[in-house]
Image 1 (cartoon, rainbow, N blue to C red):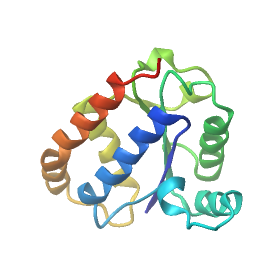
Image 2: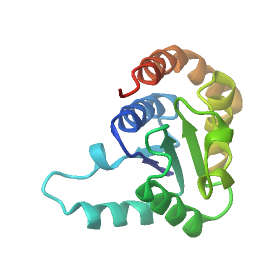
Image 3: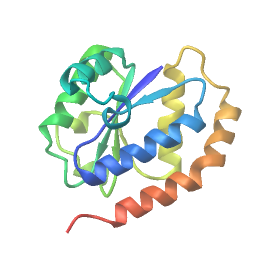
Image 4: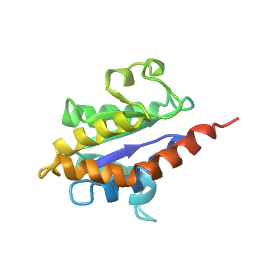
Length: 163
């Protein structure tokens, strides 16, 4: 399953890159994270590549920060994924925010805070969307093995808010 990771702005991009890198070893056989910066070929037309990328996705994670909450681009991408795939396919991932900070239309999607419990729930829900889900105990072990790396990196990103 392909999962689109959407971002807008420096801090959101940094967090999206961390999620992109982290998802690969956590769910190596079930999910293929896709992000415009890392998965569009150099020299390709970004609008065409992004459009094709969105068409191939089964789920999306929109990385939200205080700086990008009103980004028209994030709203467009979340709307495109939500419209194409329906309920349970768009997840917001919050950096430096609480769920009550998120405005409409993004507030309609269940938010994921940067806690271990919430990230585990998001990963478990993504796993359920795959054709051949990982067994729960294997997924739990993968999250356990890789959690500290993600938590450290996202903690640094959260602290380094733009001035």
